[in-house]
Length: 315
Image 1 (cartoon, rainbow, N blue to C red):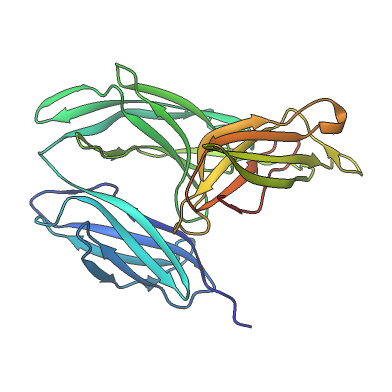
Image 2 (cartoon, rainbow, N blue to C red; image 1 turned 30 degrees about the vertical axis):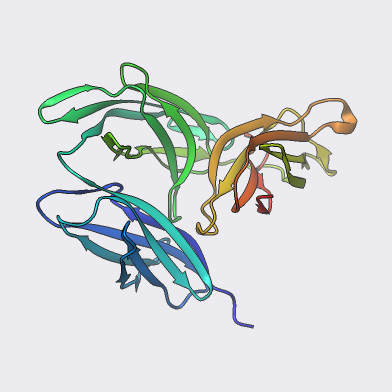
């Protein structure tokens, strides 16, 4: 039987695309599995669809296409649609026009420590300002998304979020998954043109670790919440045992997103440490979502390997 094609990741750069007096070229990259052909379209806010000519390239992003945006093109929320066999994936991106709004700009961005064991937390900090004409002021009250790009993979994943203070500063923590680049992103708003920071590389230190497993992961609705439950076990010696006091993170994939595009919802909890009969159990509540899929991830410690659950459809 022929393997089913899948779209693992889809990304658009630059984000946002800022129109000025000359055309702006966007680049669309995708990662697929078992696909010999990829079709795609750029879709404007008004619904105009322009075909993309994807060409194969070396992995990890094994397809690439470009598309010029003209100075007179429509501003607002655009998207790219890609199809490989029956697999369909959509990626949103913003198109802005310079001069109409203030532009966010990163003064600095950093990640510390630059080396950390998988499962540890990395501290992300930075400062933003708003620029319009020749004037600049601290960018207070802006939402900042923390994104991560693992080495030898395609696509960025959201792992944290923060809000700037009155001086434009922000700080948050996120789990170290693997070695890779971290960056901060500000999405466009009705008053501000968004921006993406420079990247900072963090190395995940590898050691020989024992196996772990997330078991009995279930998702259910309770009022306006989604309740996630399950247990975590590990095999530090010859037999499996329930692992207490370990941090579990919740990830979500939007409807229509590539199969690998799970992003953190900034929710985590610790597995129970006692009593023994319930050791290793976790329960965490998130907001309800219409469609898409949920996933639980454990990033391990310096002794324990990480694990992730199978995706569960949003109830």
